[in-house]
Image (cartoon, rainbow, N blue to C red; front, side, top):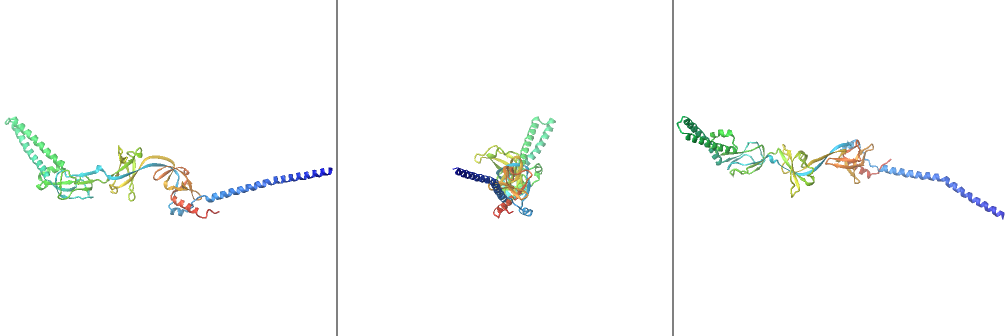
Length: 408
């Protein structure tokens, strides 16, 4: 019996010793497995870093290629952004320099010296009429002038006789009254001729004119300009109010603009406007000189006007134009040209130059105009970027994306 108990105790000891050995062996191997696991994790992280490095988008171009593709490098910095509104408009004749030329007297057209599109100088003869009414006006003037001389001589004679008590005072006063009446008639006849455009010098020489000249009336240009309308032909009978010519001084033109209701709070007299008419015509700068006080019921726009110099005649009345009016101006910490902005994966990017090449960097955009745009974030002052040619860099990155990838 004692022998059986001893054997049982020995077996239990052996079992317990085996369990203790296995536990010790397991504890001894744990650090090695943890180290191996860490190594696996480090390897995986390395692979991820490797993949990220391989997917990094950078456009690499040589200096020669940059020059070939027109890529210009600029330095990020502050600037001012002028905010514009675009207004449609039309070039028209300067109404302050538009003349409707009428004969002033009725007559028959004898000569037409100017035609449509010709330039005229101030005082230049444009047409010649034969006018009976003009002859009557000249005759009335000359008759009044002769009567004045007779009346003046009679007055002087009656005054002398009255002074010597030879004639009565009544005769003297009648001579004086007659002289006054003739002077009024002469002044009236003279004013009629002045109204027809005849100068004082012309009237002084009128008694020397022939009978043919009495009926001759010359239509003269009121100022330097261009004939834009002509309504006169040889042999035609014209009334005093007939519009024979229309001339315009086209050295300046008006640009009539339409200001929409949403833009009215921002457009003011005195603001600068850049006027453009598409290809072939360079832009011109003018100032808003007029802003209408009312909004049209049908168009819902208010009229505005810009006066443009037009000495070379390139701004022809009737042209449809567009005007950019600077309505506000702001300071920005970083300003870039719009040509520097591209879109990649639905986000605006700008290509910043690094040691490796041009890296597309996502940026946040602010206010802009037709040329420049505010960069709120993504580009720091002093960084260099592609101001022009950014589309080429975008294409270069797209080409690399379909290649073999980045190699080590």
